[in-house]
Length: 633
Ligand code: ASP
Image 1 (cartoon, rainbow, N blue to C red):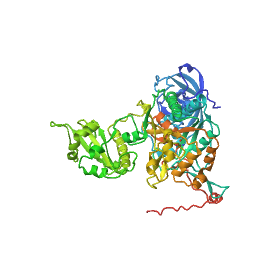
Image 2 (cartoon, rainbow, N blue to C red):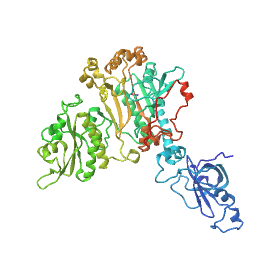
Image 3 (cartoon, rainbow, N blue to C red):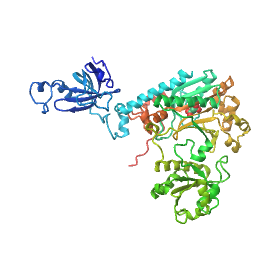
Image 4 (cartoon, rainbow, N blue to C red):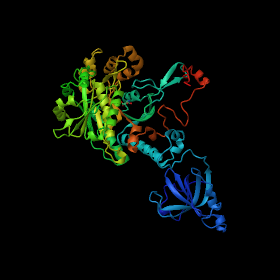
């Protein structure tokens, strides 16, 4: 009885004169006295409906335009409110009020002859056709089904679906990848994040872990001869809340056999090119490559946004020639990354073109707070200004900078009107802090182009040659920079073999065969050539401080698999949600996930997570040790 003949986005001038049936939600309602207009909405679009028969009016009970209770079709329409679900039948005609160029269906309207109310709505907490400010996100998440009715959200949902097809087109249809599903109830693997545990009722006291990624399964699939694997999979990481993360997220997970770094990078670059062309019609140019070290030195971060300059320069040598205490104290600090710098602390600088005007005192004062958040003492600021007697510095530290002025001008390309920002500390602290400062300065001086969806440049970049290991600041122990299954770069084999557990310098200097793809300052993919040799894998575990017993306990299945004919293999995983964020031009990860969680991991609609009943806990042999915090009241 309500089978539709067309969707609400379908009718055009060519349908004029046809009898049609449409279903959808009442998007808006306008009573013009002698006519009622309703915009009917479904996922495909909006169509204007007209209700023009009013029995009372036709019987001469009132003149057009008079206020009276409508009867007939207008009477039925009169009872409708926004978001009621209706089915209508009527005739398509040319739009009476003239074309609405904003709608695809804007040339026509449907004069309704029959109306069925399929479901009446309660007064909705907000309307999907909200223009301008949206209700706050909590309301949107609680009533996600209404939020998803918004055309902008519908568009993201269908873009995501199209993206899934595009991924499969490239990998499965064009490049012979096989889609394989790996378990969600899994065993702990160390990829850095905390895991979600699932108690196993049948084996009391034991737990599954939800996979942080299917890393070991995909490697073992290579041992099984799968050759090229794809999985668009859900991964779980129980990390501390962060605005741009979800505990549950989607990866495009890939692995290939019989390849080295170049092969897999070519295949993945091909995917990026295919995907951007397919989704946005954009031709991605050949991707630049940057070493990790270069990224850290020039941008202070391993996922640099290369859409703008504001490069970082190490001016330690020059800074050593002044008596400025801030510089002196920093240089006297020891080296915390011997491989990356000499045996002392560093002074790093950014030249901000035109900064003397653009960066107010208020802004630069805030920079010291930012630097402090990343462990540095603060930021020294110097304006370089024009002067009849020659350009000069004009801040508190000016007198210390004057003697090294010529060298700073030469090293940084300083011009009158620029501002210099300095951070002086140990290598790691100064690098991290000035990398963050650079991003803030870019925002403050408006040099970041709008995201690609609005026409700004897409800057794709490979970052390669990561260190294999880094020291965990808290525990002082070595950890794998990517994950412990990443191989040393081909030419590092001898260095790797020579490394012993207590030889920090050598361990730190081994370069891995890992690679990341960075887009406009966000990491969209990361992967590596894997270790396929059992002995190499055992040695990595050893350097990471695992005893042979611990390695066996945790990874015997992997070591065993590697010893039964593992081919050389390599892989990568793309963050699917991130890709969609870029394609849709949003910086809110929750916008690209149909049912996301809040920053603290709550689903506001279903109210997950929730307490388990005592009976459930008893079944699982679990007792909670949690006690509510005493109320502060
Ligand atoms: N498993 C890795 C990750 O989730 C990706 C990879 O190395 O393929 O980051």
